[in-house]
Amino acid sequence: MMVKGAFTDGILIPKRNFFDFVDRLNDDNKLFMISYVLEHKGKYNFQLKEWIKKNNYNIIEVDPQLVNNRQEILITNYIINANTTLYNKKSFSEAT
Image 1 (cartoon, rainbow, N blue to C red):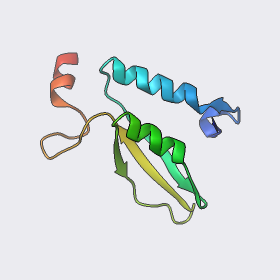
Image 2: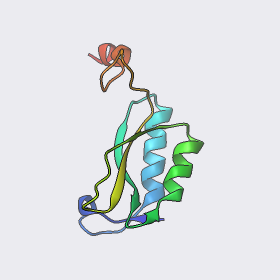
Image 3: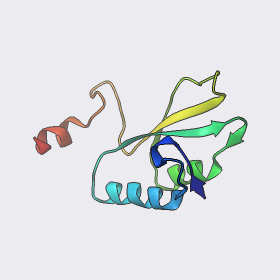
């Protein structure tokens, strides 16, 4: 399970390390929002979907990129609702 992208400068990085890092953020009660590609050119990322489900993370669907033929999602460990914007108000106020 490897990921290659512009942010890696073309170097292959084990996806597992990324998942472990995000899981540690969650374990430390740190809020996160990650943009990730769930489907690209007909290839579906089942490992990503299972990791999200296993950890009870939330998915926010982003409008499909029809030109790039891909489906991006946002992954969070908190819920965005009418009472908040893109942060948990209690956690944000405690941090400042």
